[in-house]
Image 1 (cartoon, rainbow, N blue to C red):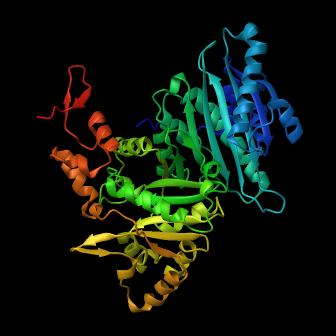
Image 2 (spheres, rainbow, N blue to C red):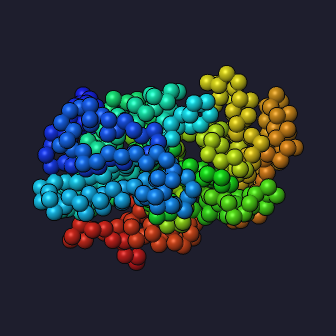
Image 3 (cartoon, helix red, strand yellow):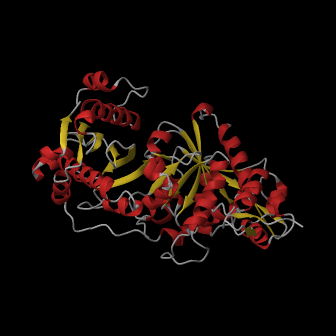
Length: 488
């Protein structure tokens, strides 16, 4: 693991180190609250060695005139950031490459932020990125990130942006070969109660071996964010930009591997959600969620590490099925709903198996809440959330919400939720799938047993064989590449 960055290097020292490097030269363009990044380089001294230009397109009309009118009529977006980076980097090359391109690694730093307003009625957040060369006349690399500002003071939020910007630029030139060190260094001179980074994306020739899905995992694993999202193409996405003003259907699972039951849960759960009268069918986003706990072996203690290859194996399958994947640190369902409710005000659907219905009604899971189970349910079963229950087969009987038994003191609470249409059984499920268990299918795959393919979707079986996932038996060629074992 490549965690070897110098944690003792302060913001001023980093800025000065960049300023004193004669090869590094670039421009700063900052919108909104992000005015402190360039200021840190000026204050460090010797800034003329680094700064070709600084500017702020604070006015929206000026911003549009410089960077063009974007499709999204908001100014704190990834689209706006990319337009800024492209414009500023191209200007550097156009104006300076003949003069000093032979001995300079150019960079363009840009950010667009909305800090806490005067009345403190908004959430501070923004986008930040660097387009940079690592050798004179070389191709450029991009690093982009989205940041939530948590300080309860506008000036402190601006200061945090300034520190983070210095950390980002320093990391681009010093930790580009060590992605985890790169990530961890972003929090130098900051703390996780001041900022959250919920999206980071590496792109360029130097980053061809960086798996951005793994970087999403690191964001959650190392506490930069409670959740991270990426799409079917494996590209990291900022959750608010994907889920804003959308209906959300979320299905949580271990997906190790995806089996027919998972597909049926997704299909039937989404179909039933779409039948809800207050759901706009054209504004629905489906999410498959993996929690940090689900990425560990069953019964592993909370300090156990995550098998990164196993994580990527599961993600490869989900992405191949066209799924958006959310990685979260929300062990309890009400925390997941609370997080999503901050992004969208539209109705959400939570699809879960019958055993999880038993789990969420187990009071011991809410001992840390002053209001106990009632406090958690106020969020989980809010006005805009509905839970869909997929049945389970036990001892030859099908168990669903109608057969759910509870302690006497919780029966009235449960009946209230049923009467108010907050819990509904999934009806058109495939009964033949109820005999399947994920762990049993995984065992059959590892053992190379005949017929395991019938328990998973055809495309999943093909990928497992092709890539030798989940312990599927492979032979090793002379060039050390794995191939599926020949079937006799």
